Length: 59
Image 1 (cartoon, rainbow, N blue to C red):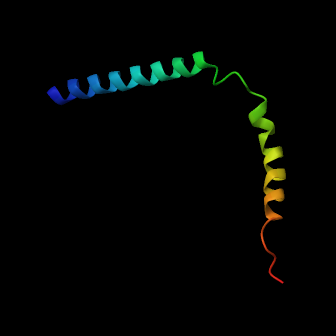
Image 2 (spheres, rainbow, N blue to C red; image 1 turned 30 degrees about the vertical axis):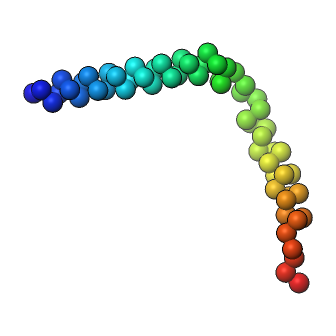
Image 3 (cartoon, helix red, strand yellow; image 1 turned 90 degrees about the vertical axis):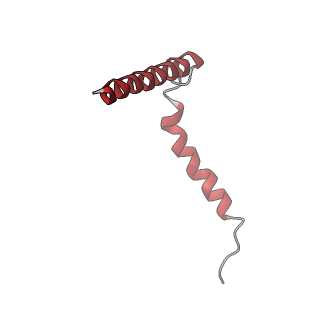
């Protein structure tokens, strides 16, 4: 029975720490930019294509 109280205390501490980290991330502005991550993959293709030019060809 004592184990249940210990597990409840540990789970409350973990939940509180995750909630604290979530509010800290929101306050720092981590979730404000919703547009850039959606178009980032379009620019990643160009950077991969330009890095392939530096590799030697197999002729």
